[in-house]
Amino acid sequence: MSEIVTSVIDEAKSRNASRIERVTVELGEFTMLGHYQLRFAFEVLSKNTLLEGAILDLQTVDGEIECSCGFRGKTSPSNDRPHALASAFECPRCGDLAKVTGGRDCVIRNIAMVVPDV
Amino acid sequence: MPITAAHIWGEKIIPRRLLLNNMHKTVDVDLEKNILSANRKLAEQNRALLDEHGIRSFDFLGGIGSGKTLIIERLIDRLKAKGKKCAAISGDVSGDDDYRRFVSHDIPGVNISTGKECHLDAHLVDHALEKLPLSELDYLFIENVGNLVCPVDFPLGSHKRIVVISVTEGDDMVRKHPAIFAFSDIIVINKIGLADAMEVNIETLEGDARKANPKADIIAMDARNGTGVDDLLSALEL
Image (cartoon, each protein chain N blue to C red):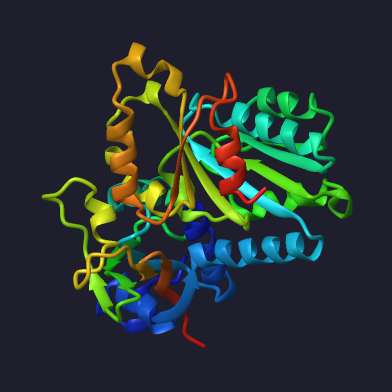
């Protein structure tokens, strides 16, 4: 999270922003990052910075897998089974363990900031 | 007398917000900065550097006390006996206990005290590589901070990733942390000699591990007495 906060503040400073209103972050379903912890860290780290008071817009990106049987698509963990996360790596078509091709990223997509109107 | 909004706009009171809006605007800046892929790119650079020097590297993950350090020490001894040159990077939140154990085998080592971070990342490993005599090495072992969650998102650039669990952690370990097993190449179940005393069923752990990652090599070990070291060496193609 500190990397997100630092990157956003650096970007805002380079544009002489006086305030940041909203940060949009995309979070892959297959990362080990949790929304609750990220929000808490964001709030703590943004104190007394340009980010203070900004909205953290966290958007979940579905996991994507690609299987040797040819299946390619989105998949989600099913919480009613043991191995909830691991179950998402199984190909829904053939049951084999598929290669994860998406949903392992954390991307700062957009920053809405107040800048001087020149 | 200070100049107020009323002076500029006459008697009509203009809210401060509107006044500000005349001089400022809100813009959307698309950044597209991928936090985790930055680590992955650095990991690829680490891998390229290791390949350039003909070094094969292995990173070990697992809970604190699962036996990662002793397993690596066993591998170092066997490889040294074959005349191979090894080095080790040890990552811990604090202290240099593991580092001292590694260098006691007369090999170069680097200690990374992360301070607060619960995992190593490719950047920390990159700096550790700067301190090692890469041109003299055949194998590099990297021991991650004891943790089964966060290291999953941070590849380091090694050739194989090994996750170590021990029977003393209970036979529900894999079910509690499936992702780390799914993203590893080799799963080691350590301290099998203690299974009876712990009333832990090794087959349960093996079955769960196979379910979490059907493609991984699963190795039962007891690093203390050397059981399974040969199996691990062959899984690592050493």
